[in-house]
Amino acid sequence: MKRTLFIALLFTVVAGFVFADTQVGIVLPTKDEPRWIQDQTRFLDALKSAGFSAKVLFSQGDSAKEKANVEALISEKIKVLIICPQDGTAAAAAADLAHKAGVKVISYDRLIRDTTSVDYYVTFDSFMVGKAWGDYLNSKVPAGSKGNNLYLYAGAASDNNAFIFFEGAWSALQPKIADGTYIVRNSDKAVALKNKAKLTRDEEAQIIGQVTTNWNFNDAKNKAEANLTAAPKEAKGTVYICAPNDGTARAIADAFAADKDVKTYYITGQDAEIASIQYIIDGKQSMTVLKDVRTLVNDAINAAVAYMKGQTPPVTSYYNNGKKDVPAKPTAIVTVTKDNVKKEIVDSGYWPADKFTGLK
Ligand code: GAL
Image (cartoon, rainbow, N blue to C red; front, side):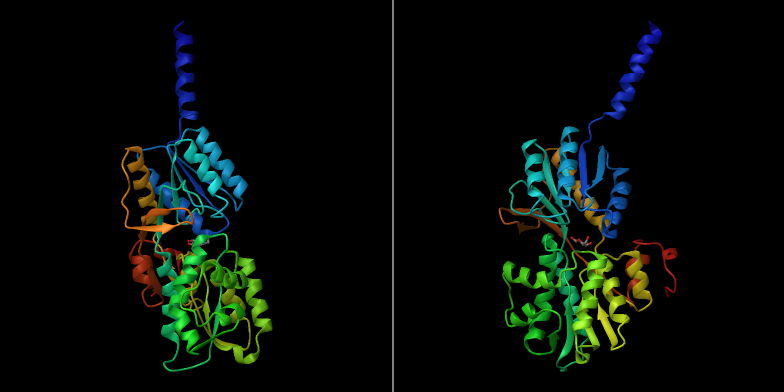
């Protein structure tokens, strides 16, 4: 009798442990872009002391898998879904399912579009990311000079951020494209629209369609090589390259560095990936934008806790997703160059010094 009771009890405990409800589900787009490994690591760190049960799943660049992940989490009775969509529009269906099941939906870093089923958006100030690229390139152009070679690249058209980054970059670059300081060398759509300070989403889509990297290293490399093959010698020499993130920046930088007619290049990036910090130290990438993922993770966790307590998270602005003004709390970004890399990346504790060589 005692033994049976003990076994029954043990079974209950084990079953309770194995089948315990997950309170918060976290869905990230892919393990193949280093940015999201950063987020996973920072989430796992922060979750140790978060005081609730959570699970991180990856969608591996596949919206169907993303939806299946969300369904699995709903069946585990999550209360809050923190989701970074692979494809902002396709993810609306998954958000709708979660909402129907009474789950609060937090769009994480990338906005889910065209649905009212998004409760909150935690994000960086993506407009300022793009503006930081434009400001950086502008600061490297000799004052009063004309006809400087500009190459534009963008993220994936399925990612709403790609549009916001582009909008920020355009806000800084367009006046100098319009006045002839730059000549855009790889997008005739951008050239055709050079006198328009504010582009419609459709116009942005036309340019992004020509210069997209799909956030993919190989696509970026192939596109840069194709652009260089098509470019005449006078479109080389000193070049200014607006690259949309660190992975694609390294691919594009390598392609430009390998072209004998390119003498000097300035290239942007974002995410403060370890490999790109090393590129910056080595003078192979000019800048990156530090988006402190620890802050984003904390904001997402705090928002989840607020919802579980029946409260609402803090709101400092709204982002329209095509169907709704989604309440949000954008976080500031930091431009990192060779000059401040030690302070912003190592001294700040973002990455340890032993990840790098040649750091002064
Ligand atoms: C964006 C994100 C960036 C970048 C990119 C590729 O949405 O904001 O930090 O990493 O996706 O994954």
